[in-house]
Length: 306
Ligand code: G1P
Image (tube, rainbow, N blue to C red; front, side, top):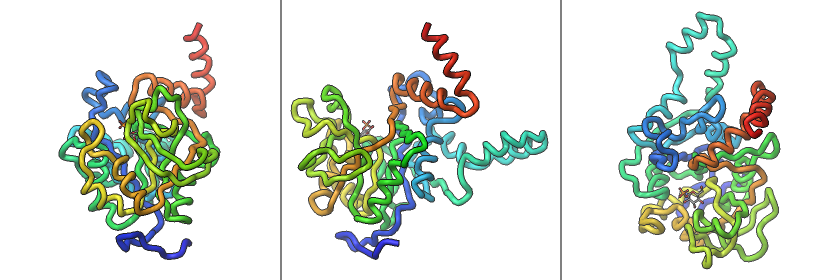
């Protein structure tokens, strides 16, 4: 158990047990597939993309999943709720394996809470909508478009939570990307070299979608953060930034003037399921390693590639 520390606002550094998942976005990059179902519910092999993200949070020790959502996306909350009629039917028909799978979607000690984002004012605004539920505790943020697969190795988000618990320094997951793509992401500035995979180092700045010629590095923000409660206060005062939206990146840039913020270099692989190509790549990846379908899937993929 780490020693009791407080941040600049006197908030205790408690263990990180809450995660905010902003899921209110319409997913226009996935249209028409996302026209009448949430993009987060599109399946990656045999389960919706959002389940991979929730399971990643659970493996990092998260006990409260806070969905920041929209009225059109109640399918997400329903997926994590129990479905009595379905379970009863599977039980009556002796479909025990399926029943166990349905029940294993969410461990019984993990809660899913939904809050609404009433206006689409940006990622920073979405995270701030969770403030009443987060309270004065540190929390993780997981952007559900991005899937992170650590392939049975050390879990990146878990490592970030551990690092926060030890040092109280905010953690931002980063990966190196080609220079021509830096204008599509949050980009961090560091004093020295990029930290080695699985390591963290203090950042000196962070900027949202900089022009390629002005990017301070090629280290992009992947969509996983561990942040102190103080960021909620900062978000309330953060004006619209890139794209006219309230940016989480801008609030983190303010935070780092008063507290340590570190970039954590990820070890796993990422898939951007908010884009059609990234979504397809995730399907191929997870199909090829699926415990039951993997062999068949690999044969199908090489057949299709002929
Ligand atoms: C968001 C963040 C950006 C981050 C990206 C990761 O951007 O604002 O900093 O790099 O997610 O996917 P968005 O993709 O929502 O425009």
